[in-house]
Length: 104
Image: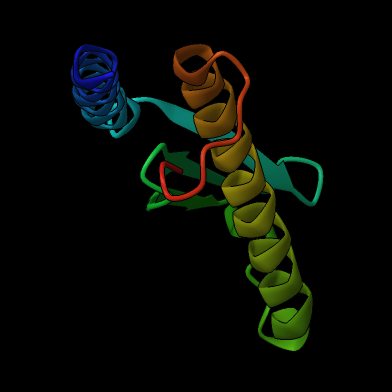
């Protein structure tokens, strides 16, 4: 029984190391999202961090600030969702599709 537990611990340590490596790599991967027909674009990395925002000057209108705010929110939320999906897919490869609480 102790041997089986030892093997299980080694496997858990190996998985933890793989997860840490994958998370570091995901910090370098990015996804892009857009709103307003591409007038507002955002880039989000695998650490759920907003990397950049690009706004076409045509949508910068002092009379339409609320519309611009809505486009930014939509693009950022879409970017975050895509980033979470990317992370889920990458972590799923390591865990064999099992949802392991606390690992993601």
